[in-house]
Picture 1 (cartoon, rainbow, N blue to C red):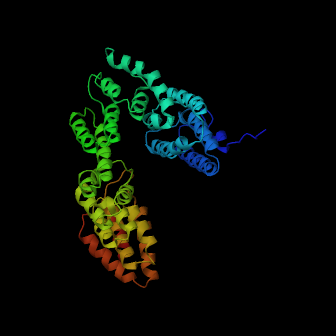
Picture 2: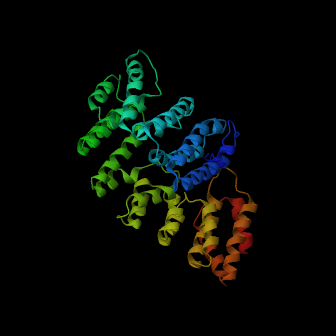
Picture 3: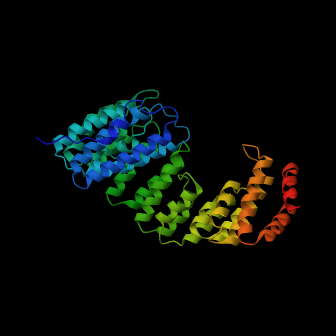
Length: 404
């Protein structure tokens, strides 16, 4: 008898396993679980698929008590689901086994109180793998979709997008179109399946035009970024790279930080010069100071220094860069360190800047300058910079005392 595999992650995903402040711990455990499943997938796709099911059915019950307001938990969950879907599709199951396991997944989708499994529903047809199984799911769900969209008032059916996905996968385009026409008003979350159907039929330009028409009819702000992302992907697939970059790439706001935004666009458009991407983002998006980390990380220190001069630059980020670049590029380190001090002297922050904060920042940069034999240069540069700015009197006095 074969020994049943023991998944380590199961012990970390019990019902209500994480409390209000459990985002960091849960995110770490999700990464570990994905790594565990991927390792098994190298030698046994069927077993790895079972691991995917086991994790997904435990996911929402385990994290449902966590405060998700920061968005960090949602990002971790989305990354987890995105990594698991391909493994689920590749799992080597016969149609009967896949059908039984998808029933477990469907129960998890019904229980999902946060809609964290929306991506699974969107590609339910692909997850079925077998067209026959996708036909069965479409037939099972289509009546519920029809009843929901023809009833008066607001109603919701969890299987709507799952049904539409199966109709696209099985190429039942007439039924898909007839079903979408039952909606009281267009809604991209559902109408995108017709755009996908057009692509599957080899009609990408029509899909692009259709998505554009949907954007003009969008009734909610959150639909527009989704439509933009869809159009961007179509243009890239059609080889219209520059058009995709200019129209959609630079205005993508789905990234959590300015640095991640820069990195994400560079990854999506490898043929476009990275320096151009950075300067285009600074020009189009604005908030120059917030691009300091991106410019510094990319190695464009002259641009980073320009960003450091902006009133929107973060003093703590500048002071960290001063420390990190002390040996790599002292001149850059000294200048950004001075700008970090200036930002503390002039800026307004959630936590009030204290005289002690100014002293600590001063000593940090002064120590680096002394080690390089440039203590006097530091004092002279800092003094000149202070005279250019309207500093808070009590904080400026701290620096004047240090400068003598």
